[in-house]
Image (cartoon, rainbow, N blue to C red; front, side):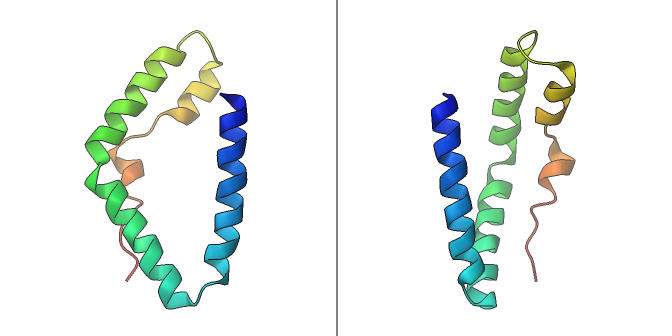
Length: 82
């Protein structure tokens, strides 16, 4: 699992560099599509996050558990950039 997380982090960093190299309009369009996808799935994302938090109880520190939790307010950050 840790190796998978590392691979995902490496891929995210590489793709972040690709995104940064794009023209502003293209970058904005991509970020808006990502935001739309997140907002379209808020309920499922929060439900799965709650399951993850419940499973992690007693396995990780309370401080880390608090950081892992998300809510609707957090998800509202992913609004469209005009």
